[in-house]
Image 1 (cartoon, rainbow, N blue to C red):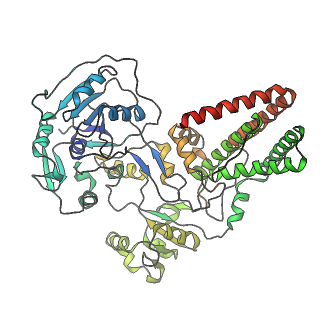
Image 2: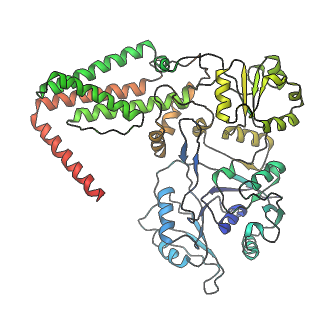
Image 3: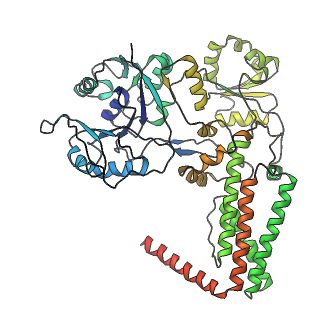
Length: 549
């Protein structure tokens, strides 16, 4: 009876040897593995989306049971630097070192971890296998990121995709057989007919089917390689309602009337604080009004990621600025990521549309690439009878984002593109019983299912701040509170925030204004407080200058 093995992979840019081990892990005692190779200098996975979706990158993390280290290109300092930045400490961890540089690393490990070490190398002066228990010292690996898992279910014997049976992707056969013997595995090498190194494994798996292949071997393995091996029957239909709303009206449609009154009253309170502050400090009224306007412009410039320089001369300004920016970040995050989209997003099975015949009956136009059209005609013969005047291909609109924008601006138009959302992958694979099952935490799925245009309402850009917040788990916690507020909308039927939708961010803002007001009253009643502020700011400035030297 085949034994199903679960292997968690934490991937970097890998060399030939380490990428092989990534593909053939089959030890039942090992539940997760970390592959370390810094030859190319950039850690994985760092998933990036360069398509106007508000969030374009995020970092993933594991807590591995097995570390496989290529010591031919990884120094001891590099290894500890990687794991100290990215991984939680695991007292059950085991290490496999490939190469001749493992002796120093074992010495360092003895000071930091309890672990078993297995060494694979070709140097006769160094043992092939050493197992030793180490004492844990005061050192721990940093715990600073969220957990995410990509699982593969393997069952031997394995099919391996390589360049040729004798030289799979340039790997040395003796090392291949050594590793297989160590793990009691058998494998069949399959010659690949595609020549392009970057695409041949993808094409092979798409042609053969993801449930018929176990192992892939590439010189460089990226995060996308482990979410892309899916047949071409995943699709999403974007069927937006027609309706044009001028962009200048977008921000005014976001909040309800009661919230606009609250914002207006809060702005009056802010203006009075700043006016009184500068008035008491013997500054002319005209100058104080200009300073108030300048500070409002500062907040706007920071919100749209523009460089800004300004001086802070009291604590109340710091509180006011920081709480206002925090409120804006949260509002933007909620609005962009969970509440709304410029497009109305529907699956092909929704609203009675489950085939091309249904689309024809509803008189929809189609936007799809010419290459996709040929594949779809094989899967859906009814597409051949679709009126030619209602099909727009890549010859008319060569860019995917252009198709979607065209569909959003056109009446009764459906846009086709592959669905790369992880939840679709998991549900499809789980339903078909395939062995390769990508799993992902539900809280991350919002990043893959919504489409945005430039100039999206509320704030045009805040992606860099959101990414930093995501690194510390803030966005995951925040978005979990708004799961029930996801609504499908169109350009014409946009979402409007009510008080119960944004009570959290606005509470933060009002609390910041109140704190700024209290601090301001303390500042004008205790003159020494201003002196303390100036001293603190001078020390902070001096420390920053020293750190830059």
